[in-house]
Image (cartoon, rainbow, N blue to C red; front, top):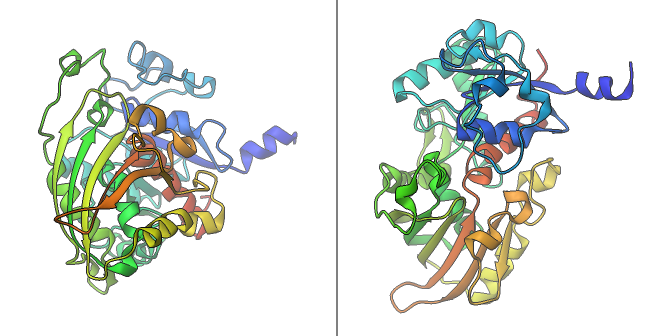
Length: 368
């Protein structure tokens, strides 16, 4: 066996369910030449099934980078044919556009075939025995998978989900300060149009415009961090009661990147120097394990008054890092700052790939 063939055969086979949409396309781009995973199956709606991937997204490829040659000839399968799709993969990334109950049923059906499902969807984010994970923050929540497997009746399958893209712009910066016990947080997010699966080409109404409402985002921004900061119990994951978070989420005319303006108070107010030290030194399980997609510097602080900027800084650490700036004391709260993350990389497909890497490293994903 030649070297390249051995490398290919040693990779885990990944399927992408919902592979024709924007997040599915981002999965495909991120998994090109991935050291651990190889895309071997793509599934989508019945309308796309039976075509090659190149044919199925003709005229609808939304990324600035070209479609990887390795996936162009893959025949798209019907996502509803669960047994057929699952038969040839070791894990599945899921990014479908369906009703919530339909997504729940589909993901559980895949898990019951013994296949790990790493989901970008929101359907299972509040299922008590499904871990919702930011790998640097709550890797211990993976322990709940044992409860989920028992419920689903599978020894190897499970569902793990990625949280909403909006919270990943500001939650890491707050999490690094947990020892000071954040108590009250006010956050306004300025969110890119790709968060709605759009480009300026298919959403011209966003040019020269701001929309002060994104359906469901404010509730997610206020509640999902509490689940991530919650505890694993015999009844599943129980959310934290602190801090109290209130938010506004605004759609702005940028292609990619969610920027957050944050005001925070603490039970034990840190100094500015302590905050900067915690941000600059913060590492999590992905950094300890040296996972392929893990940013070496998770939080990067800019001293310049006009940074971070969405266009300049969203791609920091290949889009997997978080950047912060403008830290200063506030007259109503203890501190205020801004922070930024790439919503379709760290906030969507990249975050899910990092979860899969963590799951593999911790022994939850094995070759079939």
